[in-house]
Image (tube, rainbow, N blue to C red; front, side, top):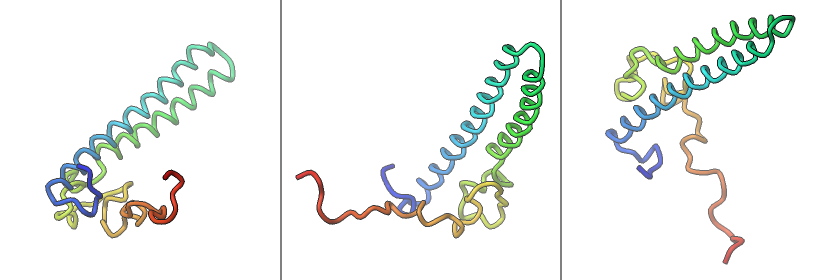
Length: 124
């Protein structure tokens, strides 16, 4: 697209938020599965003792965390289409993201940069 978020038209904005939804949900799912697979590898290493019991406890805690993170990634709003339908956003209830109310989006996300763009440059 090559444009800043405030400069996008409605169609491109909807497409951007749909892509963001899939990317964010896939990231949450992959991150949780990677963490669980690493703990399972440690279970293979430690056959008995305190380290194995610690791994089992950690596996249970991480499983619960991954399930909640997975749910938050795939169901960020009720209804889910409220994430990308910004005009219908008043009826959507979003949780765990800053996408619930456009007024809640932090200003650094909307500004192109905080660096000064004028002045002397190093390269001539």
